[in-house]
Amino acid sequence: MNTPPSPAAVEWTDGSSVRIGALVPLTRPGWVEAGRHLLAGLELGVRDVNDTGGVGGRPLELVVRDTAADPQRAAAAVDELARMGVAALAGEYHSVVARAAAARADALGLPFLCSSAVLDALTDQPTDWVARLAPAQSHGWQIYADFLLGAGHSRIAVAAQPSVYWASGTRILRDRLAARGGTVVELDMGELDPAAVCDQLVENRATALLLLAGHPEPAVSIVKSVRHDQRLAEILIGAPAGQPEFTEWAKSLGDDGTAIPFLRYLPERLGALGARVGTALRERLGEAPSFVAFEGYDTVAVLADVLRSHGVDRARVAESWPRVAIEGTRGRIQLSRTPGISVWQWTWTPVQVVDRDPAEPGRFRVLHTG
Figure 1: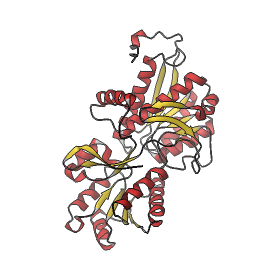
Figure 2 (figure 1 turned 90 degrees about the horizontal axis):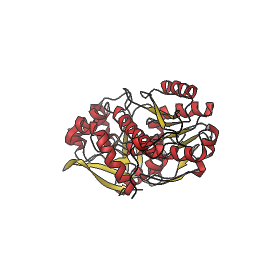
Figure 3 (figure 1 turned 60 degrees about the horizontal axis):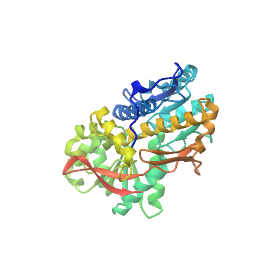
C-alpha cells in the first residue's frame, strides 16, 4: 500500500486555498460532543486530502462556524460563508438546524453536503443543491421499529419534546408499529416530569419507553427515574436518536445508561480505509470515534472527489452529485434520487441497533442490523 506523502512533501502550485464551509454545533444548547466528533472527522478528512495533493494543486481549507443548534444562527452562517466564497458547505448534526441551512443554501445556489442530519424533509421542495450522507429518518427509524417488534414490544411509549424532528420520529414509529398491530402512546415532556412519566408507563402497560427528548436533560432524569422505579423493572428504555453513543452519556448515567438500544450508522466490520481512519480519529479525539466522526470524514472525501473531478464552480459541484462513486469509510458512496426524499441521498449507509453492554459499559453490542 502506498503511504501518503507528508504535508511537507506537498508543493502547492497556487497560494490560494479551496474553502469549504463547515456547520457544527460546538456550544450549548447544541449537542457539543456530537459536534466535536463531527468536526474531528471533517478536519481529518481535510488533512488527508491535503497530504495527497489537495484540490488541483491547491490546499483544501475548512472554515468552521458554530451553529449552537440554532436554526437562525445556521442560516446567518450560510450567508456569511457564501459571501466568503466557499465552494460548498459541509456538516451539521441537528436535523432542524440542517433544514434551515439547507433552505438558505438552496436559495443562494450554494452546494451543501449534509453529514449527519436525518429529517426526511430536509428541504420543502426537491433541490439539486443539497445532498446527504446520513440515512433518512424514515429508513433508520423503521429499522428501529422492526427491532422493537422482533424483541416482542408492541406497546410503546415515547417521552417526546416539541420538535419537528421528534414529531416526525413519532409518526414513523406509529405507522410502522400500527401495520403490525402495535401501538404508540405519546407522553408530552412539556407537561410531565420524570416521576409522572413513570406513572404513565404503568397506567398504559407499556413494555418499552423511547427517549425522544434532549440530552442531557430531560433524557438523563427520565432514565434515572425509570431505572429506580420497581414497578418498571422489566421495561425496555430505547433512544433511537443515538444519545447513548457518546461518552458523556456513560459518564452521566453509569450502569443506568447501559442496555438502551440506539441507532448507529456503521457496518459490522470496517474495511481497510475505515480501520485506518478509525485509528486516526481515536488519536485525535482521545476516545473511540462515534459514527458521527466517520460521517464527517466521508463528507470531506466526497466533496474533495467532486472538486478534483469537476472544479470549484458551485453549479458544477451541484451538478456532480449523481456522478459521485467513491469508497468511504463505511462502504461505497453513491448519491441518487430516492422517492419521498427531496435531496440527493446516499441509499443507504449501514444501519445498526446497538446498546452499551451492562457487563462492560464501554463496549457496544449489535442487536439488529438493517
